[in-house]
Length: 507
Image (cartoon, rainbow, N blue to C red; front, top):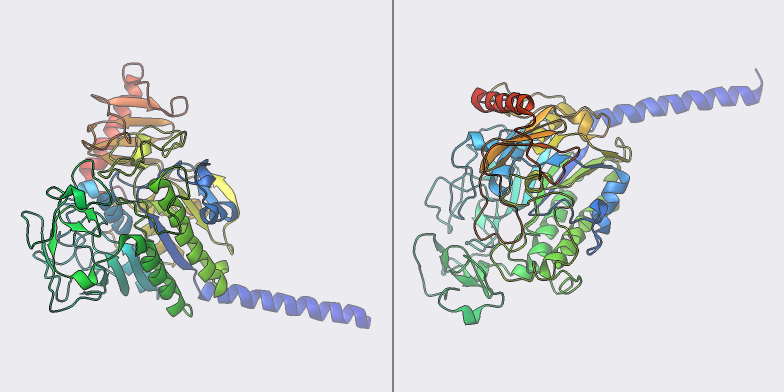
């Protein structure tokens, strides 16, 4: 063998050894997971799903480098039940008390319940949640001036920095772990959802003090020139400034990544954008033709960009699975006069679909979902039927685990589909918006429709008055009810829905 041949053999051998070592290292170090969960973002609100009136370059970059799903669903057309289902892997409609919660509700996920966070924590991940919570805190009659628990730390998270409920509900303060941030003990917080307290003015009595007028509801205590749902007094030093909210929670999300860069971490970053009240920072105000709703979409994209830049700076991007989705479909007028309807123009928040938030139609639960993991995911577009319910069991599979038999009752292992490696997906899923509907292949059967939330203007379509069957392959607008023409298919789907409902589980 010549010297040149000998050198070649040695180089090949060393390359093989290094490759095996790198593969072993990757196997020993599972990916970081960042799940970004937006609020009220519709299927058509992002550039990668066809929007042109707003710019979302950071979210579009995830879609370009990863997998973009065209038939992905949250579990409900409203926020609290979707968040409950996402974290627990169980349809919220199975559990009473999981509807839209007031700001002083008790924690609706009992401590000890297996969740995405506890599952990944068992696998050695450091777990954190930053942003909107809206799953309740404590066990009733919360004292906002002391330790507030149980909460995220009791269901698997190591760290939390929370908007306790929503931006339009009191208390308008941040919670870090078990305590309100920046609270002055001499100015205690009081919260009441039944009757007025304290001497803060209300939107009902002093509409002249409002910098954002209301259209329905939201007429109780005024904070930062915006009237809210519920009454609050005290805690003035701790009250948030709406315009700074995206900066505040994005900064905490970045800090969590920086603090935990040395070992696998799971970050659940639940943005407030684009929920009402839509009050963008001055950097984004007026940047779109859509008014504040469009401006906060671009603010949301900025927040995503900060996360991406942090992963790049810390050289974590290659082995981080980053996913983005929404808790329900879009809503325009949701209680505040922010020109969302008047300035809509040709923008279609739900894309080609009918309905939106509160609606049993596709626009209620079919939401954007994009996923990027450079070390594993190849760029693609997937039409696979996907449910957020399956994140728990799929993340468990990713880390070599299985949920207990009595937990995650509706969560399936669809990891290959989530990574864009399979087109199999789910066979069926249930959509929830007051009533229930079942999806299977091209067919959708609506069994018990609800009319949708009163006052939610121009965002949803009135549900059908009785059972309905739609062929989504030819009728994406769900305008032609085929129950009478296809009675056999309607009966089969009705029976399948009833079986899933009555069995108490689908896993």
